[in-house]
Length: 114
Image (cartoon, rainbow, N blue to C red; front, side):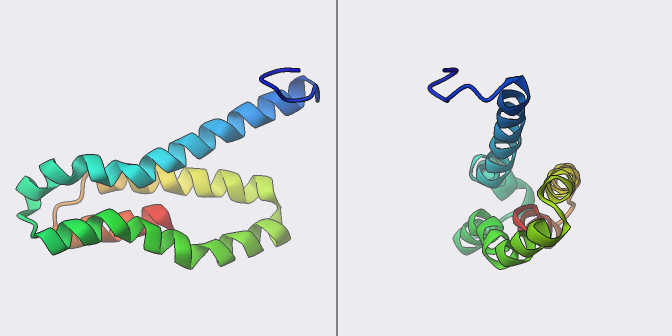
């Protein structure tokens, strides 16, 4: 047993590890906005309502896109959709760091959850 998991072979253990890293990266992106709020408040002069919206908009993207991503993974293949979603998440995450206004940053955070 490796980490309490039954022996599945080197391929399956590596696959589990890589998928785990992908999951960690996506979760970190979702929770990133709560750490950015103090700096973003100064840059965008946000109100309390705007900070709350910024903190929760990623979850709206997750809720609205889950059926779509599930359908695509079932019909197009999980590997292809996982790679596409991780790449899109990374690109949108980098683009959100260059957002000049609150509205654009909010849109990027929504699509970061999408």
